[in-house]
Length: 372
Image: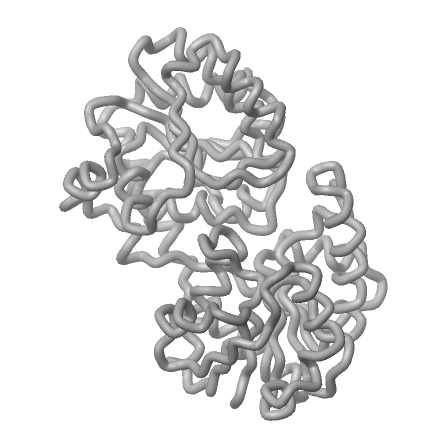
């Protein structure tokens, strides 16, 4: 089977949905799929590094508006598209002009359910894009059962949905801390403090405001513990920046920025806990990666993160700094036996989510799109 995977929306520092595209691109050629990665001009070397066995077609304009126009009206009739069996748009969108069977991945439905979590221009664009893809694609890939249910509830007319939960690299995100100190030292991270770790893009839905409020209480309980915030800036960060500047214990809050791949698992393993108080996601990959490392996780109930974590995480109400602080304080006093039991439970849960299984479901969607 020949599949063209549109990787043109993946930023230079992939996170979240971008990480998903990278992992699928790496694995499709090994499953007997003749894979072409369609990416931005000048971005071919990066994608050859990610997936050496794939063919790379670097033809898409780099500027966002031109890229979206090119996808909509030129890409579907390009030679690459004409020479493939299935076109896969892994980030909500698909060509408006094209004849090849198309599969589209829908990560979450928050553009419909919670538009206030996104920039207004993106809400309008992605609502239209998702509705169009749902009607015109041959198959939709949903990254969770949670999102699949919302697709059914919110879109009256849509293609068949194949659920393909994301995976985790169980070798990279493991319980083995050998060499962690050397890696952390190489990247300039302190190794003599206890810290809670948040990993995610800085934007309103991530609940960083709730975490900062909760940490005020946590810091009062333990005069040494710190809060480390890892991730890139998204949008709507002015309020978070103001809270960080004026926080009562600002000196104990560290902003790490984008974390290099080799340092993420060591940072997780050395933390007191991974705290992910997001109000809503399509999947919540940082939760799964922390569980795979055997790290205690605090995240939010009644969200997809509850589906991912099962009974392996502590769940709190989204938007409640008091519940979040209670959970974090409880973890500070957890003894080694309780921590080891939680690590084993988290690891066992993570092992049920693999990239191999995710790719299996992609192959189901591709065959479905071809009517097989």
